[in-house]
Length: 151
Image (cartoon, rainbow, N blue to C red):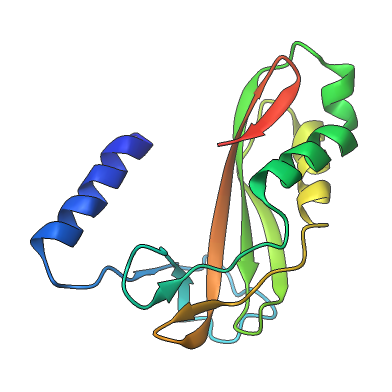
C-alpha cells in the first residue's frame, strides 16, 4: 500500500468517526531505556492530543549532514536504492535506539547511514494528552545518483 492510500484511509477514519486513532508499536524485543515497554506510540500531530517527538534538526539539515558524512555515497555516485531508519525516543525525550528498518542494497551503506543517524540525538519528548510518552519515529529515504533524500 502506498503512502497516499494510507494517508487517505487515515483521513477517512478521522472524518467518519469520532474515535481517536492511537497507534502503538509492538516491540519485537525489549528496548533498553524505554519507560514503558507496553506503551510505545507512533504519534500523529493531526490527531487530538498527540504531539510527535521533534528532532532539533530539520529533515533538510539531516539530509545535508547525511550526504556530507556518508563516504559510500561519495564513492558510488551512480548508486540507487531506498531504505528506512527508525528511532525510539523515551518518555524523557532521550534517544534510546536507532535502527535500520528497511535495508538498502549495501550493508556498508546501511552501517554508515545508521552511524550518522545516531548523531541526531537532540529531541523533544512526544506527548499523548499532555503526558510524555515513549515514541517511535521512522525516516524513509531514497538514494539516486549517489544523493540521499529524506522522503
